[in-house]
Length: 265
Image (cartoon, rainbow, N blue to C red):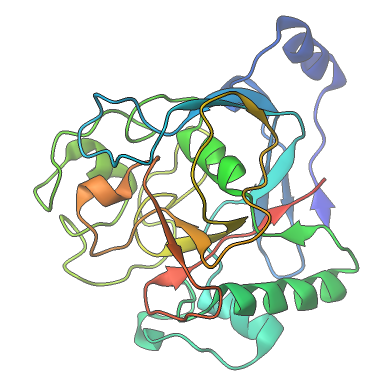
């Protein structure tokens, strides 16, 4: 696994100044044997959920403070069909004609866990995993507090929203077609397609939000649905916000659900 070096002096400056924004820190990346690129996300505190005056919000998006005390890696793109095939063999995707650089989909949460187990074996590690829901939103926001990481929401349905159009595929720009990964601009932390294209499984069981500050939340201890984030290429804009959240049984497979990897340093 290839690891890029970071100037120690620069890290010391960042720590001393107490920066929480990864955009203000050096971007350490690793690339594994399959060509998967992951970026190191530094710890920080952020407001998870949405404010009551955010257009398109849902009632359950209770705004609350989250403190993430550990760094983690996040894959820069969704897992592609080529990457899935390199680990698992047969491609389960409904949209094979889209090609190897399109997200793998038609995979359940349980399928993602099997992929991760085999990838860990292949790479000689136990560090690959799905991101938690809090890690996912923290990485999606990239230091922002708006509906999208690059600004607020102006359209709720399928009309053109300039901010969303720049970074994600949704019903306003996808022509109702799934797209290859990294076809839009990344967010400020170098992550592509955090919003739109395919929904992404997270590790957590789906549950209600707390009212108070939480540290390194892992979600409920049990449940019936696993968290999905990010919206879909055919979603209206309100369902493709940073705070939008959905859930599905962990064994369900759909043509619009994929995932991206997290990794523990």
